[in-house]
Figure 1 (tube, one colour):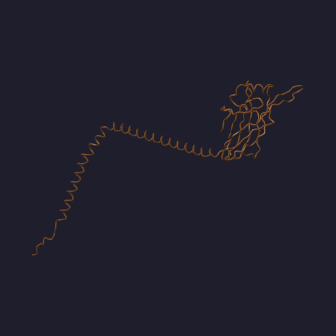
Figure 2 (spheres, one colour; figure 1 turned 120 degrees about the horizontal axis):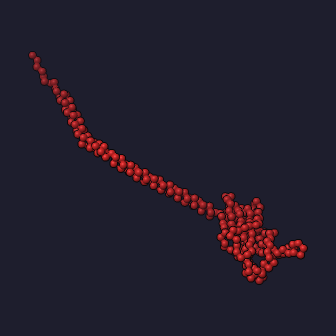
Length: 249
């Protein structure tokens, strides 16, 4: 009669039983953790849900405001940078532009026959001189000019005469004077104008406005004004700095 050798082992069922115990323990532990941690949190959230909602709204509003301020700040910085870039570009171009200077020529007094036995007393400026002190060429279009006899200049200059330049006229950047004859233009004055000027009883101003194009074909204007000074046997024009008559654009 044969007996069992006892080689059969029950280790596997034992392992299965231990795994089950471990699983039960883990489930128990998880359940305990949920009860200890999550249950109070859930209870807290449920009990203070209104306060939490209000606080969350405030926090979101604060962050939204901060984001808005940051966005505005970035936009402002962008605009400042853009303006700075434009200013730098404009300055670079301005350095290259023409710089116009002007001088006025001789003043003549004369008379013209007007009707039978009548005389018309006149003055005329012989010429204007322009020079370009800048780095690039200037292309003159026209020069407007006028004069005032009286005690003060009008607030706004009036230019009753205009002389147009030839199409190919150029003021080179060489500082040389370019003559613009004006002798054909006359303005009527009183018979005693010379004595009145010599005794400072009245003033005479001559002024002009040059319109020209720069090397980029942009339009510019340059205004100039002079006041007449008369002495015995001589006379001269002196610059008058009145701002409205000396505008540069």
